[in-house]
Image (cartoon, rainbow, N blue to C red; front, top):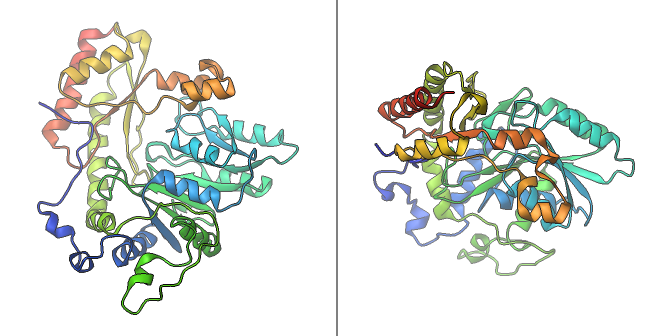
Length: 388
């Protein structure tokens, strides 16, 4: 049996995606993108959503909209994908990496406050909490810190489309939250895409302008038969807009996201039932909740209880036809960041330990029950064969 790490769900006929305006010839940013944004506003319980071409773009324009200066600092977890960090560096900002909580993936907020207490010159301007795998950071504590230390909070919600924290829906924020619609996310806009959500209308207007060259008017408004051709570029912007083709794909996916979420809950519960009995494995999603977007299902191995290494176990699983991944190699362990900032592998021990023991298993709504059973049976068989 061959089970890819991810298998996107697409309509039987791509004709289902094509709205009237697309058939009439308008395929870039226009009415379909606006409709997609409106749907997202309802889902996120947000006043404003700007659809863009990636989560990286969303993170970037959010920081750029705040007019931070080179060498301003921002706090970000080291256990994340590189986009969470590089967007600050685009602006010349300096990242302050924070380790994960003990035996957890999300940022250690005790360490965050320790760092903020030492910032006597108020150089730290922002924090980028990452809702890893869909489990939310304690946002009530984050906003308490933000109020206390005057921080801009930019949530990296790439994994958190359906997530809710203690204080409400991720995306319902007076700061900003960035989402991903990449090919393997819970919904996709045809392979690439993202969005930024905020209740701050001034911030939203600026981000929307920056997403399209800093222009005062988008193409759809300028090129309609009764449109005005005059426009102004009032500040340096970027080419980050989402197309109507992408948005039409996203609109189709939004019809199904609730059902897909509940399917991932079923699969996660099945994994828990079958794998929790393995002494050499720790299931990272022990308590499955509808408040968790469940973007990833990750197991951690206890190395001393296995005769083979984590990497060898991954190879054995792959040889059985099952796709896997590792989320992630921490930022401080990549050569660019080691060279630039002098990080050592042991600089952040919790994240290092996680990265060396985790395996991401397939988790998506298109998984069939027999495929889920095959994954669990494979891991159970490998445990029986290679337990120490």
